[in-house]
Length: 488
Picture (tube, one colour):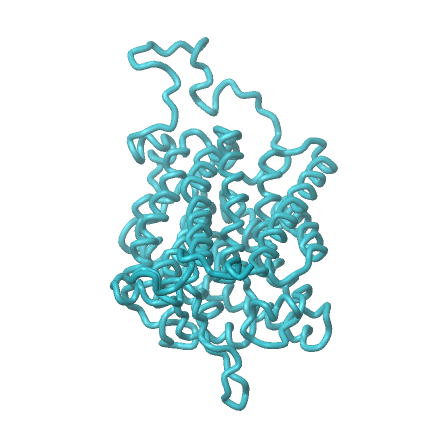
């Protein structure tokens, strides 16, 4: 019986130079798996979702915008942006820039230097976070979060942004916007110490992406008139495959944010799926009630709003709250997209290609606000550095928490509107933000010299009786769009 209590050699510390005594192999494995799951959400998840949900002539360009952003962010991240987000404090909302490339830095135990939380009398309330794995795991985990944020912004700009302007936009926005939100809320900035709750990026990722995407869409300008009037998906099944990868990858998105494989991680994964499923079903039911048929694109939008809404509170709320948040995320963004969008001139003027404002900004703000209502004290104690945190539903300081959530959202919104506008105006001085009219007319072939599908054989003469489906604007019955397809 005594032998059963012996820790296997493989899990003991100091067994070799590569297994220091602080390393927990289970935590390290989960963190790297979580990072990989989040990476898969982008590549291939959003790459093929974007490639399938747009008009055929934009499939290559849309997929490539995501593909490029993933690579560009990762290189910028390790070169300077990681430490701006999680390094030593430079300003209350920004860390000091520096590389995360050196061997000594990457193989030491992970630490988030500015996360110490103090009582009013100066005593330490919660010490520096020190997960039981190396900095290399932390740097990569945070890198894929940064990358997906830029890819979400791309969803607002598909079908007309100059690809060269996008190549400049990605590193600039990462540097001057993402790092500010990440440091302020996660890396030990002023909102973190004040106690604003953002479990896994409802504000840092989704609200910022939705607002930045909408703002950038305003400056870039709209798609060609013909594209705005009719923009059918070129491959709905491919779109669903990307959506499925996005959904399943969210287990790493929310399950990896306790920085350990603990019970709070399990709660986060379960709540994530509960809310996403609820939201998808509510959105679909609303489509059936008001448009008489279920929209597949609408179901994907509902799935996304559920995933976004639960993100800021994934490990902080109970299961019943996850269902409630799913009901709200399946209905309120549906209402803003289907009703308010048609009646508000500003929303009509700005061409937000995939409705990222509704699916990420509205849903992210909704999630942050409802987290301020439903965050359960015992679950908060498992995760949050500010003691006695709770949602308004549980009394005490909860009412103040709800107000903190709104202030945190206001900061993210304001910063992104201003900084994204400045970035776009600066880029516009160097290169046009929007494609030329010829490129807008032709699409992928003009922009990349490539097309998504070869629809007749090499050397084969075009025959309209055989190849009539070549163009996504020919031989289609002109029916009115229903459901979420009205905005995509």
